[in-house]
Amino acid sequence: MFGLGFPEMAVIGIVAVLIFGPKKIPELGSALGKTLRGFKDEMKKDDDEIDYDSEQEHR
Image (cartoon, rainbow, N blue to C red):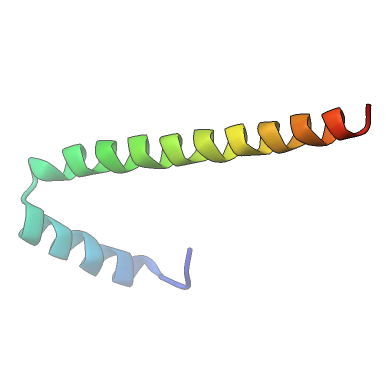
């Protein structure tokens, strides 16, 4: 993923734990997941609206 290997991912993980602390990491992961899910849902909604608009033009 992004050209990162295990050693690089381990260093990023250690730095994240040092900066945010072990209790805050799950909260950050949950918030990131909700944000990405919301973004994905909005993109899907926009695609559905575009499809609906193009169908209306052909009628």
